[in-house]
Length: 553
Image (cartoon, rainbow, N blue to C red; front, side, top):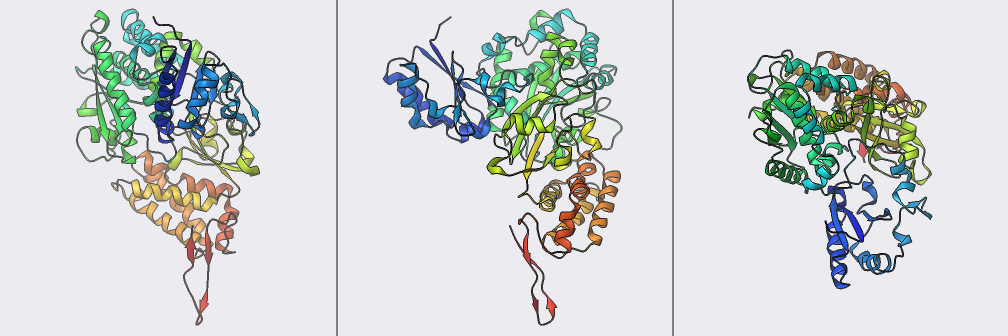
């Protein structure tokens, strides 16, 4: 094995590439060649490192120094000063409050205060090299499962771990598997739901880009447990980098004999196919996703029967999302007890959040379940920028609700969030300050749901549309006091009568903002004023008639 003096890890996640990561890597390699040290420095393209806002990112080992916002023009100085003379470039280091430099990754609060299970390999390995995954215990859990354990043993360990589905509902994973395992069928299917559609959410995409083998291994463990020999990864076509790296990972796993017929000399065979969605948000709902794979219109089905009984092509089918599957190899390898040491009694393990909005350091954050919102926003995210104050955080995307300042110490788990009128969702976490208008926020997410509704059921198709019209009236200065009652009544009715989870949760952003920020609705309606200054409108009288208000954003 070749020994390198320096390892230069360059973030090659989608965000860093979009910020110019490719140009920096090319410039760095040119400088290494120019100084004849390309044989001494191993340049590695990794997946997302997490601190997306500060990309492109470079981590230099053995020191573990992280450089942020690197550009092609910085390559010369890095090579000449750091790589040749051993003098790290302070001006490119991670800064604390724009002043003090952190000497290494272990000193940066954003990383030091996280606990990584799902993201354990992201930013550390080349996602297109199966050997790097194997070097970090990759496929060890699969070998243990199919050689040393019976399918029921695998299910029992997952049940004991308390792992709950990370796609939103938080249903116990092992229990879900047992439903399909108990079905007498010659054919069963395992599906990975990678149809991540929440605005501002990119947890699944980053895992697929940075550690695709963890998802493949998780699917195979699940397939073995339920008796399935075929799996499908349903991924959004808008994720071309994730698709490319998945294709590479599947090909490499087959070449290594880790995917296909009689894996590791056992009787277990498993194969995986990719299916690309066209960007319909509703296809994140499991039965709509199944319809899409079958070549049908992406519309939800009535339940029961549930997919575990009758799913893809009428056969027992288990659907888990990317994050759920990425946990499995750790649980099987290290045991349920190891997993349960993190999180809470009812919500064990960790959760990945896409921290976005009005926060100093946006990016991917993985913390133990039950970590407070305050710790995520202030201890890890660095607080609110430019001296502004925290106003609220929206969890769960279009299906979630807003947590106000008075509940900022709420534990982020599956029990605490519903009590506040919101949900965990897949992990989107959008932070807002006093410059955010909560009525406008509710309108934005409701408009998203209206645009994405499949139209199959009346409550979602028509009800959300009527709620949106009311919000548009309010934000343009034409609202009435009765509109608040109308929104609440319609929202509660839609939650009770819509066919699928998309429709049932669609009113959440509206209902939660009314609950916690009702005074903002009243200010728009009575005072014809947006306290945050977002919804700017004016009502003019001309000839005794009041004109419709004009709205600008």
